[in-house]
Amino acid sequence: MARVELIMPKMGESVSEATIITWSKNIGDIIELDETIIEIATDKVDSEVPSTHEGKLVEMLFQADDVVQVGQPFAILETDEDDQEETPLVKSEALINQPSNNESPISIKEENKISEEKIVKSMSDRFYSPLVKSIASQEGIPFEELEKIKGTGNEGRVTKSDILTYIQSRNTQPTNEDIISKTTVTKESSEVNEVKTEITATKVNIPNTGGTEIVEMDRMRKLISAHMTKSKSTSAHITSFVEADMTSIVNWRNSVKDNFKKKEGQNITFTPIIIEAMAKAVKEFPMINVSVDGTNIHIHKNVNIGMAAALPDGNLIVPVIKECQNKNLIGITKSVNDLAVRARKGALKPDDIQGGTITMTNVGTFGNLMGTPIINQPQVAIMACGVIKKKPVVLETEDGDVIAIRHMMFLSLSYDHRVVDGALGGQFVRKVADYLEQFDNHQTI
Image (cartoon, rainbow, N blue to C red; front, side, top):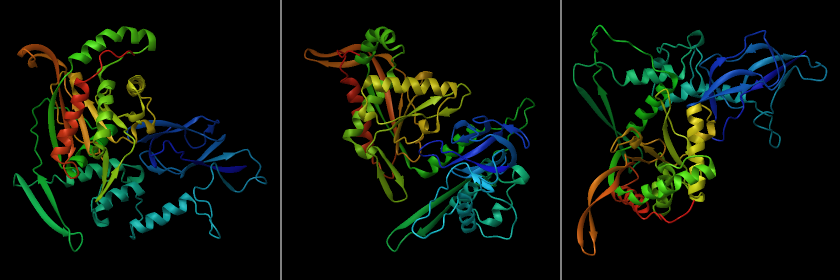
């Protein structure tokens, strides 16, 4: 008999870790090749991990809610392979780090052990995953405070949800004052001073009205909550608005939608048309297509536009249309439809929601005129499109001004004022509107 380690596979280019949602098998169960052994969550996408070997499950190295790094073993199987032909413990995949020159190979387990020792040094026997330690480090939570957090994981372990919930309550401690603001000045260098403001809001005591139901947030809602809160505390949000005349686009779409449905087997909506206009505008204003890392600005060459989509359960997900600058309207339409369908079915892959450089959200779907969306970190801009509504508009003609009924839509761009000034943000959203108003309604598709 031989023992084989099952390794956490790479679920996407930008995915480095996954959280175990549940085990599909128990200790002692016989596992078939390619049979699902665990279900995992990477960001907002849930996936199943199949077994790469046949054998009996003899050890679970992690429990539900634990975070596992890509390349790290998560289970051990006992197989029928001959011990003489196999080493006492066989890895199902090669070591992540191969030896270079005269160095000895270092396994993921050893690397994580070294990393953990660097992050937290204590006499405590309580286990903390690398992700929990990283979050604690980023939020300035000392080890003594970390020890006091109540864990809901296996054997009282602190999970990602536990520490995020704690951080939220930590920043909203009860106080007799409405708002207490503390401003501390930290010297980053001999020339630069950074001002950090911590705002502690009063915790509201919700009265018992006799008809209240308390519902725990699900995993995705907790992720969204943490992501949105972090974005507001990270970026200096500002929003600019313009109004675009969509009459030509509305008339063109009405004239081609039936033929497009027969030809391509899918609908053409306003979303890909707006995304195409955004991609064109980014070419003229590339500094809107950036990300911020400390004091470094990452300028992205590819225009990867995230498309915020509401799920049937009320949660939100943002699949990404990659390299929009290289796609025509048909290509963008097919990508939008494919991602939208798979989002509703819960069939998105981790890579489908990674790598976005700028985002658009269509609040007009719900009949809203406009919105002030929150930036999807680490991006610096997100555009909201309102409902397309008929209204009287003054038009300038050769014979003078006239009032006409036009299809109008508000565009609003929320952007990060740390790196995007009002001139750039305002010019970009205006340019998107210009491309929409200059749309060629004679083109065929």
